[in-house]
Structures are given as C-alpha cells and as structure tokens.
Image (cartoon, rainbow, N blue to C red; front, side, top):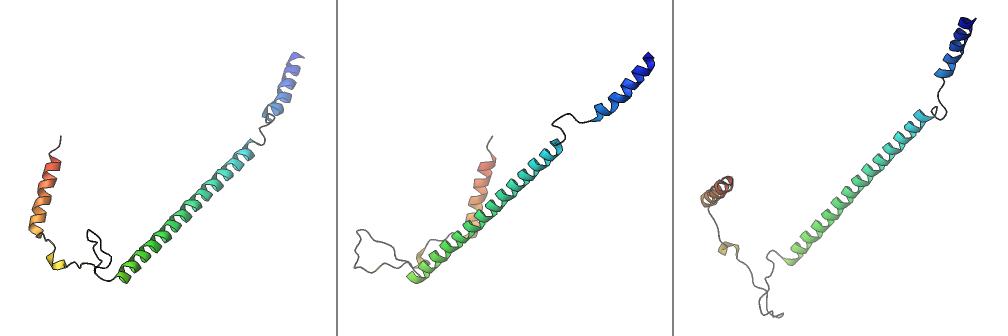
Length: 122
C-alpha cells in the first residue's frame, strides 16, 4: 500500500513540477518587449545622429558657399588694412611674385631633419 501511495504521489507531482511558477509565463514576452524597446531606441538614436550629420554638412556647405561668394565679390586680391586706417585710401594690392619662395629640396631637407629629431626621443 505504501508503494502505491508513493507511486501515485510521484505521478501526481510530476505535472505540477512541470508547470511554470507564477509570474514566469510572461517572462519571455517581457524580454521580447524589452528587446523591441531597446532596438527602437537604438534606431531612433541612429536616425538622430544621421540627421544631425546631414544638417551639419548642409550648414558647412552653406558657409563655404557664402565665403566663396564673398571672396568672389571682393575681387581677386583682397585688400590689406593699413595702420593707421584711412577709409578714403585705396587698399594696397599684394603682388604674389614678391612673396617668399622655398625650393622643394630645401623644404625636403628641413622636413628630414625635423623627422630625425622627432625620432630621437626616448
């Protein structure tokens, strides 16, 4: 008789043990909703970053176009202010042929010396 009671108790307890504990049947659903919310938030953040980058690009292009049009409207050689400033005086013109030039060989030698000095650090 004891064996029959023990066997019946084990058989009745097995389906009860297989049932989920209260609150767990929706755990997978909760995890799925959390994952969906995280993915939606990440997608919204990525859209915001992309829109901000596009807006920055457009603003930079506009500033560049405005600067180029200002340069073009001012003429080829921009005026250099003199001291003391005389608003009635014509602006001086810069002659590019009078600017200092450095031969490529001299520049390359200087660059090599600088790199050698920078590589000598310990």
